[in-house]
Structure formats: structure tokens, C-alpha cells
Image 1 (cartoon, helix red, strand yellow):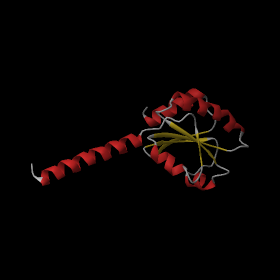
Image 2 (cartoon, rainbow, N blue to C red; image 1 turned 135 degrees about the horizontal axis):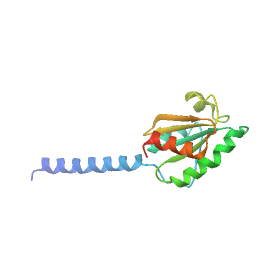
Image 3 (cartoon, one colour; image 1 turned 30 degrees about the vertical axis):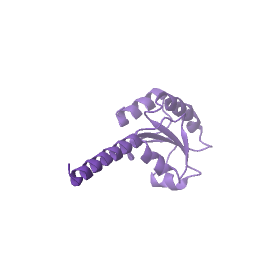
Image 4 (cartoon, helix red, strand yellow; image 1 turned 90 degrees about the horizontal axis):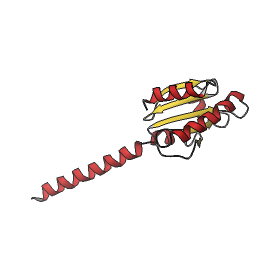
Length: 138
């Protein structure tokens, strides 16, 4: 075998390793519950997880308090399959404006870093769950 052939085999092996690392990084991490997000951490979180649901809420919002325990339950149920985050829109107005959050609670649903759907308002758990699963194809 010539050194050119050996070089090519090494390159192919390294490329396979890099692709496998990238593929593993795209999976949703197994978080214990929803991750608190900020303007600074938002984009990194949605880019590092394949399936993401972000609960956009505010402290003063009563319907947000109704949705919050639902999000907590779903985060536990779909741990490792869907990464859940919580974004306080009063404290993180840049991200809220970027995604046009006009009403809360709003759930933003991302697949591979792209916004694929959103759920606005306090819906029953079953409807929230069905809409998330349909949007993500999980």
C-alpha cells in the first residue's frame, strides 16, 4: 500500500469519526427537567438538541403558571428525546422579540434548530403533548 492510499484511509476514518460526533451532538440531551434559558444561552440550546420545546413565560402570568407543571411533566416523560427549556420573556426581551412573542404562555417547538411550530395559550396537557409530538414527528 502506498502512502497516498494510507493517507486516504486515515482521512476517511477521521471523516467518519467527525460525522458520528456531529450526529451524536444533534440528539436531544437527557436533562433532568426544563433548562432555564436566557438571551445568551437560547441559540446554543436549540442548536445542540434535535428536538426542543421552549416555554416562554413571565412571573405575573397566571396561564403560564398553569402550563409550567405540564411542561415539567413532559420534560420528565420525554427525557432524552425532547429537550425542554423555559424563557422568562420579561428578563429576555431580545429573544422574545426575535420570535415575535406577543402572548404568553407560548411554546416554541424546534426541530434541528428550526422553528417548526408554536402553541399559544394555556391548553390541556393532552392537546399540548399531541401538538408537540406531531410537530416533531416523535
